[in-house]
Amino acid sequence: MRLSDAAAPYERTEMSASAIPPGLTGPERDITCPACRQPCKYGPSNAARPFCSMRCRNGDFGAWATESYRVPAAADPGDDEDAEVG
Image 1 (spheres, rainbow, N blue to C red):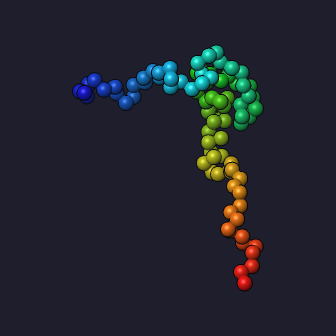
Image 2: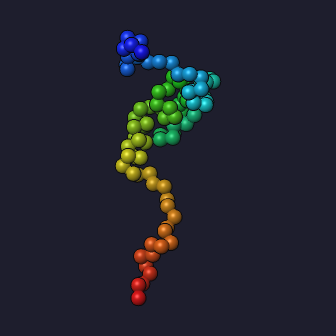
Image 3: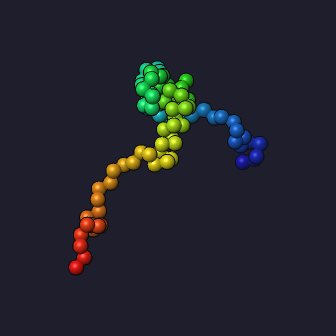
């Protein structure tokens, strides 16, 4: 392949039908923003989906990045700090 045949890295290519996530192929839906609870559209016209804006999207990303959201883990049975060693 010649260099001139390759697409430039900044050129946008269309996604194939199999690469489009489910729910984005049909009409836009009215949903509630998970961050601020305001109504918004879920579809290709909303780049911040499922959020209403980039502000809400970035706020959620920041919460994950700072580990504000945590998934509870089961306690390890071999890690008993309260057990006395005799």
